[in-house]
Amino acid sequence: MSGLSHTGNRGLEHIGSPWRFGSAAIIRWVLPFVSVGSVVILARVLEHYWHSAPHASLFLCAIMFSAWIGGIKPGSLALALSLLSFKYYFLAPVQSLAMEPIELPRLVLFTLAAVFVLAITGAQKRSEDKLRGTASMAGSRRKRSCARVRPI
Image 1 (cartoon, rainbow, N blue to C red):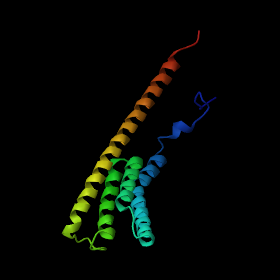
Image 2 (image 1 turned 120 degrees about the horizontal axis):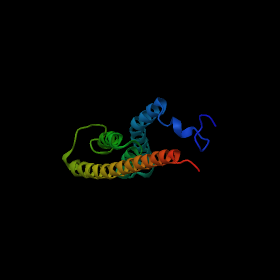
Image 3 (image 1 turned 180 degrees about the vertical axis):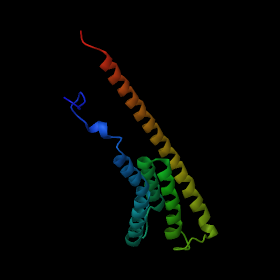
Image 4 (image 1 turned 60 degrees about the vertical axis):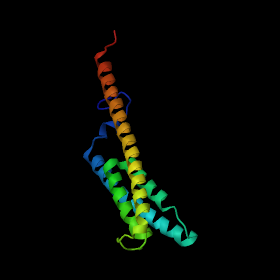
């Protein structure tokens, strides 16, 4: 079995290839744009047909999804895009970044909720990555220790 691991599978040996890291980075940074854009379209459609839409909940889902897949930085990008989209499309005056004082509490509450969701999702992602790294280190140590043990 030349070149094959003891499981007969070479798939895990190519995880660190540059192509894989490049495409993963692209996905992480494109995802906030796609998720927030999808939320804007969905919220506008719901508002048109139902005359009501859960704007904040949809944007919070986009932030959570982006942070869960990409981490804290793409989640922060989704948060910024969500704030701008929420203000531009759904708060008076619509299609303007000017702010009416009556809408300020709504935007502040949305911002606080979004930051809270981002912080929790980012902490979960960091814990998951740390756990994955620990499991990988334990697996490589086990593999090295098994290589040193010779049958009698």
